[in-house]
Length: 376
Ligand code: GLU
Image (cartoon, rainbow, N blue to C red; front, top):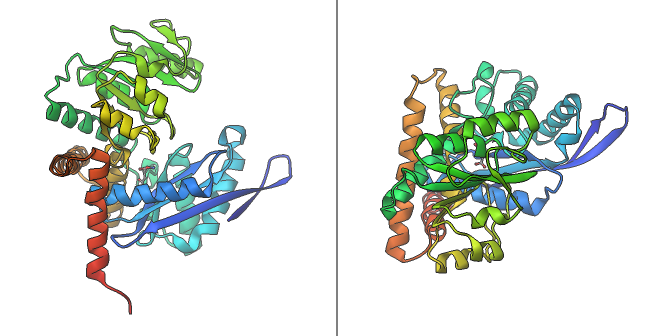
């Protein structure tokens, strides 16, 4: 749809936005909203499909959706961003609602944007619909666990993979691409799990310290300068060198298409856990598989985010907040169960974890379609 927005200089700019429902057989459409200058319909469709697979593989009662607006939020004022969000929400309003389609944050969107969505939907419908959006601020029915939940789910997958491969976690080295909403909390969690985070990259640069980076110091440096580049307690890496850093674990936690055939040939780690959506190109997958690199695919690995969205939605609908710790325990259990099922299926079929995840998920969707039958 077209999303006209009055900019601060008085001009009207018309942005393009999309909301795609890939499948709604198993439950309301579920998936994030992203603001990015390169967004197009193909990408939104692919990401909506990935959400169908993600919710099905973890057996969450949702379908798959994705949405977004092609814009560069870094060049927009807060007011412009709010007007864009509200007009976009208005355009897709007929699709939305706690039982129809429940958006969440994604690239360049956050709790603030979700509060605007929730308010726009609630004002339009004349009732406070907190369960219409997840990843909200605490003041409007959000949960404390949501912010770090993708990172927490990644750690569950790292533990499960290392356990299945018989690799010790303590002292193992990790490299992370991205130090944002997922990469930053992940660095802390991996460090607390006893791993050494030896290299971190972001859009502006990369740092390496074979003894392990001081994650808290790095976070302070990023807060002060906006990037990991120039962090004094490590050496700078050139872009692309990150993947060659000797490590047991590599986590792409930035945008899509980070791991191409070239990176797949050079990648040093034994295990890749995909925190971003679509970080590995199709051409890279067989190369990694042949080299014996174990890849935990995005549709399993980063499912912690949508799992905690499910918990937020459930609490909104129950009208009661769960006791502290309950959501974290359920997140860990949901991720472990999903991982174990995919791992077992991969072994049974002799295929990659990515293929096994799609088998498990699409069987579940197909079964729902079969038992529901054809209307009328
Ligand atoms: N944007 C997140 C994802 O890609 C969360 C989606 C959601 O919670 O609906 O999985």
